[in-house]
Image (cartoon, rainbow, N blue to C red):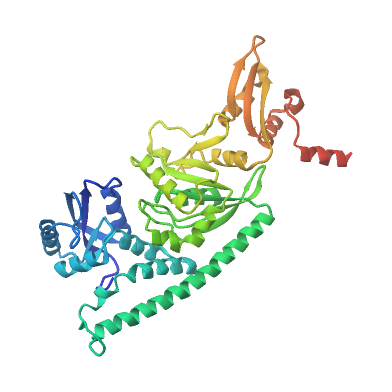
Length: 442
């Protein structure tokens, strides 16, 4: 933070320590992906085990010497820890290694600073950085004289620190004021959508789960999407049309990660409120990831923190193209309500199932009944199965099939129209709105 740094390709020594009493250990592979996303060039990975971190250097003196040798051997410019370091630990390690030291929080903040594009995003990142920096100011002025004592004995370093802290406080106050205006504007936008009866659906999920790729596929947008952590930072909203629902706002949000720094959650409160105030959350999951279950748990933890854990949600198991033999489908609960959609946003497989599931969850006119299909309606039966609308089916003695379906009424009516089947012959009624239109037409 206070050392000269190149723009890209910094040579970095990575440090990961497993602690015996650490119940929630960080993932070393994810840590390396974070460094690569930040533009770092890992040249050495120092691993170790300890019972507890040391107060002075976080690691033991032997491990510190191993890190020093790795820095000297590769000419590394930065040492990055896959842990949260205290300000004093960062200062002590930097003094020993004579190079810049970052912890996990500082690394994530650096990535966010690179990804921010909108004015709001830049303000949010700057706020989080300033709050993080305020506890680490002293290490930037270790080259100045500081004398302890009473009046008249204070050195220039202490005066400079006081000045910097005052400037930081003023800047933080200014940014908080600007973000409060942003929060008010977003609240007004949500009220306008609510008055217009336009539902909001927010994409949430672990970073690099494929949210932006799915967003682009659903909206024909061209927001940046890449196979890297935190490719998306700034929120994006687009309007889509769902049959039986009408206009719907789809929002893409920042990805979550293990132990997401609380300062980031606080700074991005205005953005995350879009997810907290949505009618439906689409929890995008990397179905092919070995850490799938752990990632789901971490997303749930962040949803609790932003008070969005009680919202209805639909899980989107993405990247099935990386799972041999996996076919797109909709999973339903015991009541027949969609709870999970398996698809691939990259290849487009199963994308047609998502609007159907969304329409079911958001539509007020949902059909749930048993219809009897004669043998000649085999093609209709196949279409019902393709749309994952069939809950149960029973073959009768006369060769017909009693099928229990749950799906938007408009979708079934459209199928019947294509097949040339009268809805009344199956006991399917028209929507009440159409009755009223027909009555007025008479």
